[in-house]
Image (cartoon, rainbow, N blue to C red; front, side, top):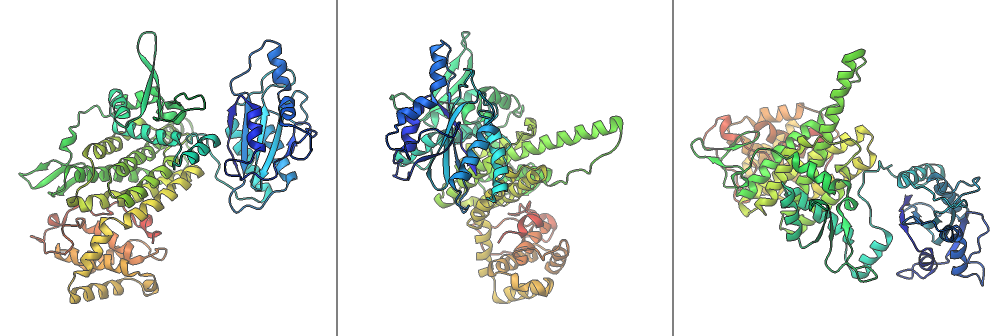
Length: 610
């Protein structure tokens, strides 16, 4: 059950919509199911009753306050559609009346026993929802307060769902971005756009913040993105705020519609953006030097250790570097919470402070993951994969925020990685393995973020992370590593393919053979052959991979085993330029060192995927 609160100033206009045909003739049998006194005349049930009469009744105390010379608060008309979830049973009028009464009571506008309660009605014009309309002036002409009304309405809906046997939605914590209003959604439908201007601007402003290291660069990126920008200045000339608009988005009066950064999302306000830029990495990074090669040693200087020299472009190197940062975020999120410490006195205080700092670092990691995901989606040119990545980014955005304050300094590496991806531009064909590498690492980092949120009791964020992981997994399966390994397997000589398949079946428990897919076996045979040519013992790797952790819960044990081996042997990611397995120049372990496509894909992370 979803409440969607908005405020306005014209009760008569709202009634016209509620009793009208709707934007698509979807309104049927509009009528009042509940009101402040239970006797309000209903234009839908009583011939001769007009909308003006209902509006005058609701506005009685509003008019009296105006006559007394007292100002009305902005948005004195409180509007709350309440909708059941798809698949829920149809509620009766009496049940909807109970829902309305409980919500207006929960938000503090109208207790049934209160003589000075606000006037309100609940109108039903469809099977699955009602509209609650409240005028916020009480009988004593004071104004009803609506502090934390969204949180209170949602909390009451969670109770109603349980009592009415409806689908129980995840409770929120007040950190979600503001949803578009019904009017904004209808406007988008009329103009034929998939997203409302609010949603488009929210995405564009967040991307500008992701790609900027300074306030000046942030505003420059807003302008380059084609947004209208209005800065608010103090008498001193200092910028103290900003608003953005979409060209052509106008209100009924023909004026430009503006959205302040803080109304798009709390962390997009100018003060919070300034704190973000102040916390940026103080070292100067030459983005053109990402992944620069040390030709004297034939290796690449990158965070995380030695890597073989590759022909990757700057864009490919930026994606590999992002994977290193995501690895660190994954390790932080995947570390078990410490056991409760019952030490007395100062030791217990220090332990609590340490736990709090760790949660702040984890919150920073969940936020930083989103920035890398946004940058990756923006920087990809292939339409289908780009759409999957953008959907993953939109879904994961809810998981990027919680009530735990993020330690901004701990986001530096991820934020710098996101900026480098945007600065470097789309990957090139020679970067075949780079995208798969960062995608595989993103999948497990997002899964780790979902588990961390679940452990903290953040149900909405955990659900968003799980959905984003599904989108990412679909994108990953369409990208380089799976396709290239499958191609490499098809190019193997028949005897090598047979030898590796037989070894795999011997190593994997018989009870799991029915779960092995052809694609999973392709990945495993190609990996074993590559490991053999790199100087490893395939049988020893198989035994170690199979025994390192249970496989019975794996969707495809061959797939899981392949990525365990690639991590153990540190095999380089195959690329579109090399889909055949070639002998290595040497048999040392150093010759095989490379960045596996799922180096960070831990067994538990990947095993539940198809």
